[in-house]
Each structure stands twice: as C-alpha cells, then as structure tokens.
Image 1 (spheres, rainbow, N blue to C red):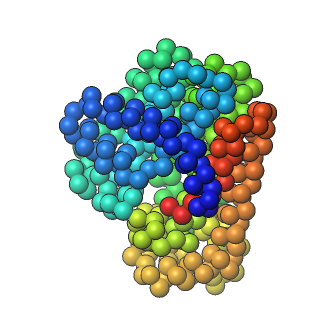
Image 2: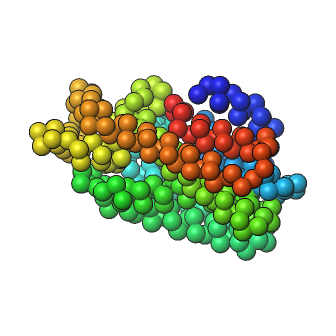
Length: 326
C-alpha cells in the first residue's frame, strides 16, 4: 500500500499543490466563520482524491487549460459540506481525529457553512458557463441529500438489505467520485464515450472506497482511524460486513449480533465479539471481495484510453482506495 501511495503522490505532487493554491485563494474570499470552519475540515488531512480525479480525468482527455484547477475545488467544497452535515445528523463526536465542527462552533454554524459551501460549488460551476457541469453538480447534490435521508430512514436497522446498502453508498459516496470524473471530462469537452467511461470509473472507485471505509471500522485501531472503534455502529450505520455476516450467521449468533448492535453503549469486549462473528461468517472477506471487484470494474472502464502515465495513476488510485488504512 505504501508503495502505491508513494508512487501516486510523487507523480501528482504539482497537481496537489495547484489544488491547495486554488483552495487557499477561494477560501480567502469568505466571511471569517466560513473560513475557519471550512479550513478546520478541508486542511485536516484529506487526501484530495476527489479533486485529483477531476484533474486526471481532464488530462487523460487531452485538456490543457486551467479550468480544471478551479473545477477541482468544487468537489472539496461538496465533500466538506457533506461532512459538516453528516456529523451533525449522525451525532458524531470526532472527525479525522478532532472534535466534530458542530461541537466546536455550534450546530447552526456548521449547517449554514455546509449550505454555503454547497451554493459555492454551484456558483463555481456556473462561472465555467458549461451547462453540463452545472447539471452534473446539481444532480450530485440531489443524490447525496437523498442518500442521507435514506440512511437516516434505515438507521440502526439490523435487517437492512444489501440492495438498500448499495443504494445508500452510491448516493452518499460513489456519486461524488462519479461526478468528479465526469466533471473533468466535461471541462475537456470529451466525447460521450470517454465521458461515460470516466464516470463509470469514478462510480466504481467510489463504491470500493466506501466499502473499504466500512471495513476500517472493524479492522483498524482507533488511533489509525482518528475516531473510536465501532463509531459507525454507534451512529446506527449498519454496513455490508454486518449485513452479510448477519444473513449467514446461525440463530444463536444472530441474537448476539442483534443484541450488540441495538445497544449503542456496547463495550469494547462486545465490539471484539462482534468483529469475530463478522470474520467467522465471512462479512469481512465478502466485503473485501466485492470491493476488489469494483476496483477491477474501474480499471476496465478506462481501458478505452491509450496507455499513459495519467492512466496508470488512475489505475493506482483504484488500488489505493481499498488498500488505505484511514
């Protein structure tokens, strides 16, 4: 994993610097409270994968201009807005190893800054005068909002189906990756074939990314994650490792899993018991296998492009999203 990560970030060092500059320049225009809360999230360790794939998608389509840099921050703003809103809805206590923004500044401030960042995403898109890009951003915000509502509807429900889970993670996570890749192609005035290939790539790495994220709650330490182990479960998020293990478990194991999940104050011992049951009933391995399949799908989606350094970076990013530790 470290080799892949080092290879990616060595090759995109200049791109990441351009993204940071674009973020700095744009954030300086806002009110002090917007600047403080946005920076608290944006500059707290994010990997910039979403904004990076905007640049790479434009580049693989032959783009040579500067709009891709400005366009890339749309996706940092969108992502930051969802984090601000999600932490409040989920009653989360930490984000990237720090107290959730709403606990530092207040619920109203966090929500309103999130709303402002969403509006800024559309405003930036509008400045490009590309109708397809504006439509893309509008569709992303709609899908993410519905995804949050869908997740809220099924909060804490142990009988959540795999189909509903997939719908939730597509709307909450994959659609943003898909839209980022589509945006790069739109900026480059790419053909429909190339645009849809990149959108398919983005959707697949987004699905793989979220599955890997859901796995981390059960296979990583609190120190590595920057949040308490089992945090997702405490927030009522029943994810694929649990869904699959619960489906395949024997009745006695089902009862244990149900009891632990329904108790938000479960102990570390209980959590370790649950993790062992997930392993025993293949919840971990099934999720890993499915995530790997989406990575393969992502790589296949961009097979229409000629071999190049940019294509190789996109392929490495697909591998990285399921090998990362945070």
